[in-house]
Length: 187
Image (cartoon, rainbow, N blue to C red; front, side):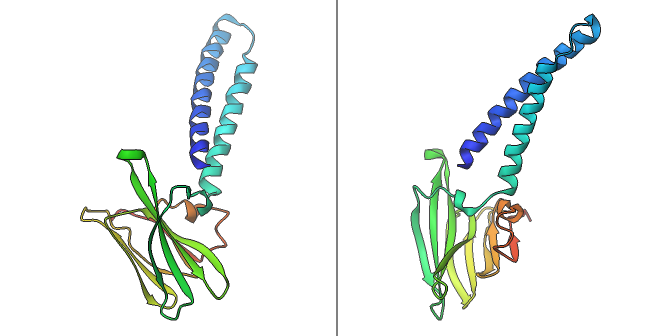
C-alpha cells in the first residue's frame, strides 16, 4: 500500500507545482493588466497542497509493520527462547529486482499469550543471526564489513522495537506497542 501512496504523492506534488507556477504567472498578469483574479487556479493549487500534505502526514505518522510486503517473503532463521516462551522468526523481503536488495524483519511469537508481533525491520546485511541473551532479550546481529553498515540490536521483546528508517518510532498507530523504539543512526 505504501508504494502506491508514494507514487500518488509524487504526482500530486508534481500537479501542485505546475498549478502553482500557472497561478504565479496569472497573478503577475493580474497585477500588470488588471484582469480577473485567478481564483480557480488558486483553489486548485491549495487543494493539491492539502492533498499532498495529507499523504505526507499519513506516510509519516500512520505507519505500521503491516505495510511490509509479505507476498514474496522468504523464511530466515528461527530460534526459541531458553525456556521456550518465545520464538523469533526472521523473514526476508526482496525489493528492487535484480539491482535491489533485501529487507529483513523479525516476528516474535509469545506462546503464553498466543500473539505475534514484529519487533525488528531493517536492510539485510551479510552477517545475520539471532541469539537469545535471556528469556526476554533477543540479540540481533545484522552487519557487513563496510563502515556504517551495522544494524545490530539487543531488544527486550515485550518492550522494545527497532525500525531502521524510524517510521515506527514516529507512528501514532504504534506508540502503544512499545516502550522504547530504536532506529539506525550514523556513527
